[in-house]
Image 1 (cartoon, rainbow, N blue to C red):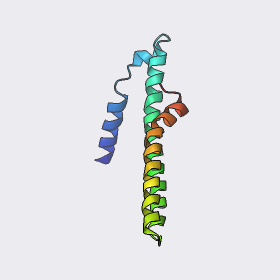
Image 2 (cartoon, helix red, strand yellow):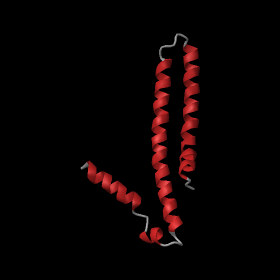
Image 3 (cartoon, one colour):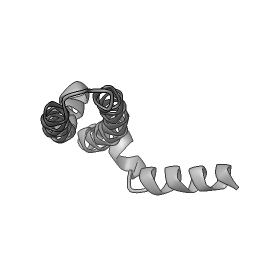
Length: 100
């Protein structure tokens, strides 16, 4: 059942690529740009998982703090940093794969 869902997802994601864009020298860049964008999207999801994992580790260390006000400000700082990093994952992944 899971394999069928994964296969359906792959067919849906790769379905818009016409074979002509990959074979024709005039339209080849269209197909290549689509594949680069698709890979960049997958890499962005990977980066988001890494950033959220790092955030969870940083927040876990705050819970043992004796200073409550310092813990709250630290949590707010880490949350702002998380939001910034989450917004930057798209541009980082597009620059890594050269997608535009």
